[in-house]
Length: 84
Image (cartoon, rainbow, N blue to C red; front, side, top):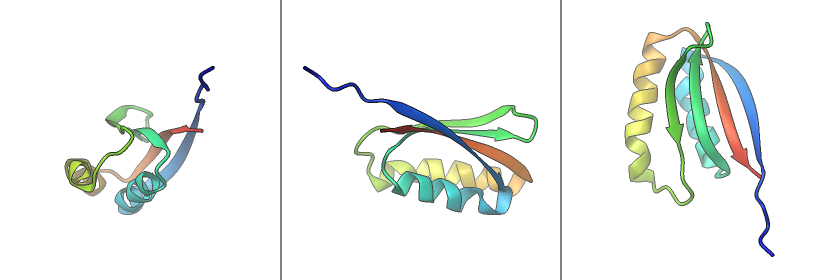
């Protein structure tokens, strides 16, 4: 009998200055499967699916994109889907 994995969604409000650090911290936790970044009007501005076993070099384009977004936006929210 296979065990079924469940997911949980969380949302964090952050500023542009803390966006990149927050995304890096979330990815480091290891159980994050999807990250969505929305502006203060709830418009999706970036989505990043994360697979199990992602290596650091594969994350570099994500960090570059998040860094560029951080310079452009003031307030945003990060929605995270975690696997339990």
